[in-house]
Image 1 (cartoon, protein in one colour):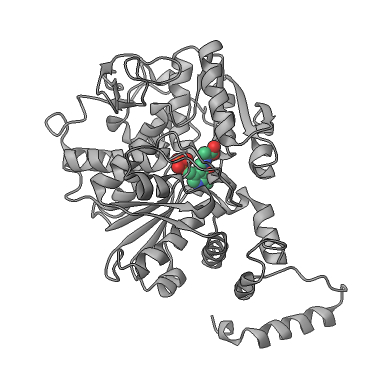
Image 2 (tube, protein in one colour):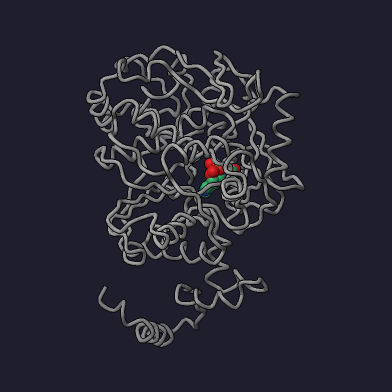
Length: 467
Ligand code: F0G
């Protein structure tokens, strides 16, 4: 097994000199270091990372494109990471020795033939971030932020989470020899994600509150204890998550799609992708901006309401409730960054119902790739944006699938058994989802029973007979 931390140095080019700075997204003040809460010391708002070397005058974009592609055939750990492969546009650690990588990124871009037919969008793709080492897009940000935690000499890293961040953080902390503290809302995250954190050795606290309560507590904690926070308030996380966009554009031969559609929870990912798109445009890596649209669950629609009711000027928080537990967030930390991205790219912000999420998830499952419920809001949202004529038939659309199907087996089992909407206000309407349900059948262990079941299945679904 090759080492998980980058140690080969002989033929590896030196990392660029660390020249990045923290800039406040509100007052614009710039500093060389950030406090433990990653808030501006002048006005308290969020920080972003800038680097004077990310300029077209310092970088030859044609050479960069071929360097990034060549690294795909290299065996050096940094090159094999789909994040560090793009290190010229990332904050540089002091040494490669600090880099913690699990070979994240390099995720597939799939076409979606069945969803194309349903939506009437022939050029429809899914960028599947659920194919990352811990099963979600979080790994792309975590490799960068955990690296800087280790460089700063922290023993403990910590996060509040709806499950995926904690799974990812715990894995990278373990690989980097750090301890991890996880704060999750009790009973509100999937067992699958919780079990990952346990196996990776995290100190896991299930708090009697929601995600927003966990995040509030974490932000207090970092002011009182020497723990390094790895939520997406940490701007290093967003730098790593930018690489989703670099890699996507590389997969599309640098021809920008018309639309990129992402789920919105704490709004870190939409902010990161938007930042990457703007930087790529600035550098001349792409010639025009795709529209970046954010989709939320109706029950966790803080950004939708912030834009509709407050014109994006102040946050309208909500008491969040949705079975898409990954995005069960009512007080998104990065809302201002996301508003800026929507305005800069001309994207839309929509909400979808629990029924629409379940249907879209089943449709993505039927494509043979699957995803977790929070990711399925993208397809559900696309259907709405097509109806509104915001997305047009001849346009190219990329859905960002943020988490793997295996992340939330309870949701999937409840759906197929017909229990998902039992005793809810959607129970009656949910019968329209019956054609998507494939519950397991229990049979006597005889050839006859299996053959009869096969024949019945053939009769009830003749359309599939010659697929
Ligand atoms: N999709 C999945 C699968 C997620 O886990 C999350 C967020 C999102 C979408 C939303 O992304 O917060 O950047 O807008 N999960 C976080 C967590 C909050 O703790 O795992 P966002």
